[in-house]
Length: 237
Ligand SMILES: [Zn+2]
Image 1 (cartoon, rainbow, N blue to C red):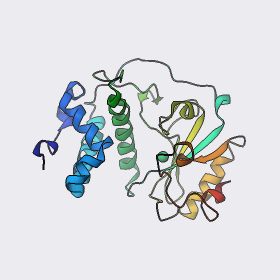
Image 2 (tube, protein in one colour):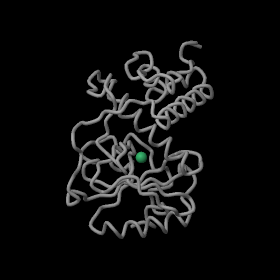
Image 3 (cartoon, rainbow, N blue to C red):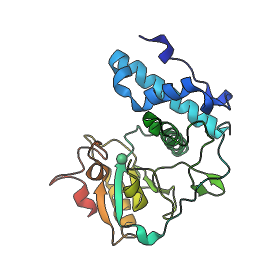
Image 4 (tube, rainbow, N blue to C red):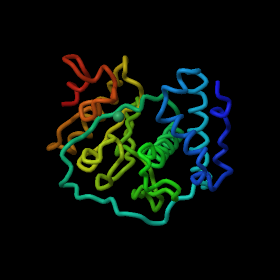
């Protein structure tokens, strides 16, 4: 195994982490190129991936990730919204605060690293900018709503803010994203989650309801139990 793949990035003590090429390559591999590392040792890779994500979440919490002070405005007109895209987080269930912090960190990594693969990321080497704010603080949430197993709905983004949830700019610009907390590759959401989302969808009567996988063929999100005659999509529409 390549030893240099498994190092502690210690982001919480490095205010300049975003300028470091090794950090970019490592994050890229941990988050967007799983086949290489998984092939060598899947458990170890998942463990490291988790460690990096937690380290990033900690760095955000203690304010050591440099954020840009300004950038392009990303506000839209709500009239442009014509669909609701359903996601699952695919994650184990954790306390509320923790989940929010990890989702925030995950999407921040997503913005910063992913387009790097085409060597054309304008964010590379720059302080981070999402264009989205809540209570005066810049936020990096990809979803508008997160729905917990007990039916609690957390509103992460205002409808006028564009969430980077689908991987497709034209979809993101015209949609609301609702994420169910959990993994529904085999299981289905709780009845409390379904009930809460039914109520939530009443706010968007003119929107088409689609699973992430219906707008982007390369993902399995929101799981294998979503579509089909007995799929839980039926309960939402
Ligand atoms: Zn998704």
